[in-house]
Image 1 (tube, helix red, strand yellow):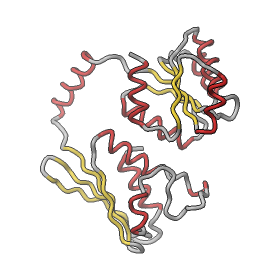
Image 2 (cartoon, rainbow, N blue to C red; image 1 turned 60 degrees about the vertical axis):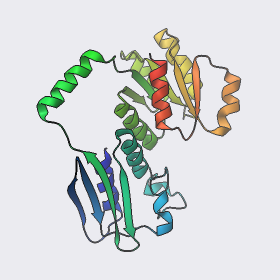
Image 3 (cartoon, rainbow, N blue to C red; image 1 turned 90 degrees about the vertical axis):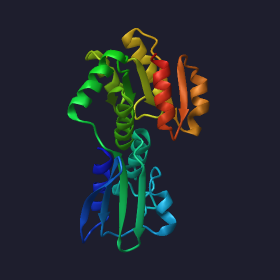
Image 4 (cartoon, helix red, strand yellow; image 1 turned 90 degrees about the horizontal axis):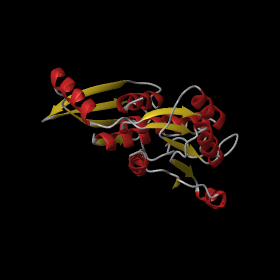
Length: 243
């Protein structure tokens, strides 16, 4: 799910009556795409927070039936990665407009030429085995990693990850959440390494409360990232560990 799809989905979600429209306007060498709605709008005090993880204007008590509030956070991170500036304006009770600025594309023949050049001059995409039991976080992280150029194989549990390995997946790196529904991320890393007969580099993602437990496990060739994980730092680590 990309930037526009997320913005349109968000606009529809908060517009019970009225319209959602998409406008495109050329601005120099870029196109400004605006997604506008006649929905509930955003209080001025909350506008600066709408792109933050897990923030929802109408869901301050964290009712998971209303979603996790990751949509606009995904939009923010993708926009930053692709260097597509984002903006938002809103009037409470009257609606909101989200805009994204996108550079003009190249001619088809130029794009083909650049792709051919990339294939011959770049290294192979790192193969990532990613384990996370929260479906929304899983989706967001897969999107981040794919944009970074990684080939991602995802699993909700450690056993799912082992099944992927048994099916022939040969990862270059393991990335796992620490707290999983079956056994923890440290055990996932150990079992995948055993199954592949390879001391694969690993990244473990965890909250502050898990750090002491992970230290006690004393797993080698593994880097710990505390949540919330910064996508840029994660991409940099993947690139470094799979060189």
